Length: 448
Image (cartoon, rainbow, N blue to C red; front, side, top):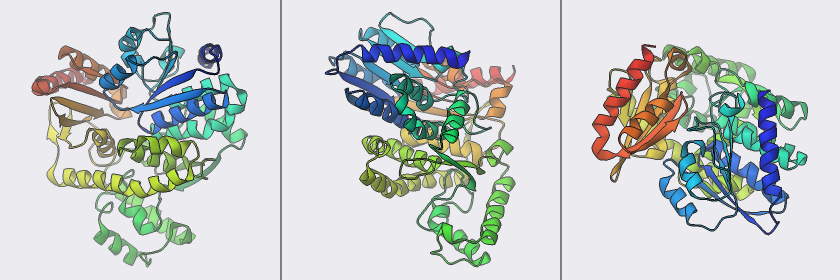
């Protein structure tokens, strides 16, 4: 039933697109993370194959200034991907035919006649765990042309980038995955996440999983190599079975001692999916896209997804700089500690693009499971807040999307997202009042 609703809406969206003359240049607006970039790549490729030109822009939260620019353009159709349901009023005011493909919390069900909203949650699909922007975009791409099934690698990369493999791939995502495995478009293998030119490099830049005391610490990695009788320049593929087992046991024990939750431990050694994009494993590709989008090279990420080999090589180079910034903040947080409210931990970050990433890693690999984590970034006259929880807290009543939306609205800001992860932007003069209100809301949620 749920998939049927999505299929009907996808066909309706395809009809809107195909009703336009081929001379139409279609505007594509998407989020700038791995899910948003893969969503954009899926739709842009499908539009190009259908004979349409496109103009794509990858945006970061908040979308206010970006959407203000788009509203002044002369567009015949705008397709919003991995965003839109939380900006519905702004989009309706554009008075332009629009298609929204989103899996975040929606503000309202009914839209104006010019706006078609395809939101997972309105199709009886849980947007937190069962569908992401990329898998929903893939549904539209297939409705445009059944030959677009080869874009499924991008869809699975979006699932991976959005961390929807935690707790197991399920719902609509699972339908897409099984289809890809049956068609042999992607291949499955079980393994641990280690990427790099050498094993030393892989461990040094490992941020997700973050191995406390090992990640970013060359001296400790050297000690580990000595204990395992490994050379510093050994390549991951050159490890024998016994060496791999010893290494994996050591790393898993590190996480267990740190108190990582079982559902997070289960993600370390798990099924992995080799894509048809440079034969790259989906999480490896998602990490590269995140480093492009959040490291200030958004166009590079889109080019990579659309098959540009030079972009792939450049992304691999830039990823180390991106990860080093994250490692510096994580190591500092471990040393100096986090600030505390009654219902959540929080910390101040220098970069709003990285705050959510750092928060997610710290939530899973540094802090205990009992409280969500907020990152706060002061930027000119605004503060940007990213917050991360876990499935344990969501099951107890946590809804960060609601907390961010309600608190931001109170102070004329913008906020929203998922129950497990969301964000907000408000005037910096309201910082303390905002943080107190969020504390109050989350405290009530946790009391049931």
